[in-house]
Image (cartoon, rainbow, N blue to C red; front, side):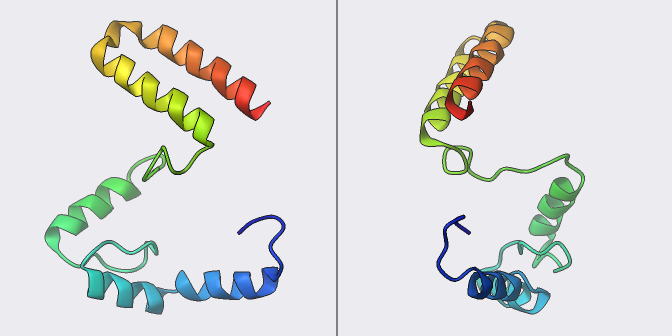
Length: 106
């Protein structure tokens, strides 16, 4: 929710509803996908394996380029491509990305 949202209480009420087990069960069943609520069972065996992987990880980010500042996303995506092409440059890539992160987020 944006920090300057006009109706934060209504926003909180909507978020609480949309994240509820009942709403998430409906969407998971209708769409055949994992729910955002971890207490909703996976709709099939394939999704169950994905859920187990997610729950055992330290964290999850679905879309890096959509979930971060556009300038940082561009630097990160370029870093990913550089790493895939030249994996031996990992330390330099990470150093450059950290410098960009510090510059962009100050």
